[in-house]
Length: 156
Image 1 (cartoon, rainbow, N blue to C red):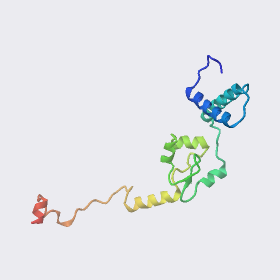
Image 2: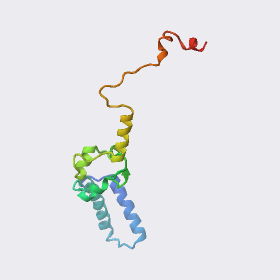
Image 3: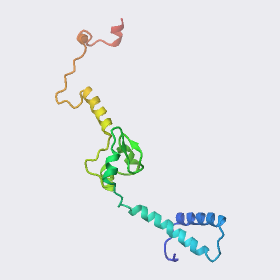
């Protein structure tokens, strides 16, 4: 670490805390202390930059096949089951397309579990959603007799 290089105060503070904890439990020569400090700081910088550039992670075809179950989709981000991945991916700051690209998934990889999609589809059909010609709404039969009357008139 050169005097001209910029030092991240958060990393420096974390380095001091880590080395202090290490030195308090281990016997360290005073001549080795600078190398331990610099090595720890370099390791922390390495972990921060490695996490940013790690785009080479791809799922294998077997993992992709196993991630789709009838009731759930297994997330590659945290290996937990979800009925739908959209909200879960938003927590990681990913869109479905970014998620597919990150893990090497096909463009038609589902974002909802098959059984969940089927239930939602059946519910929508039962409600008549998506019909081109919706049935016209027929109000109750006695509407013409009550036309113009308020609620108080009906009670009397």
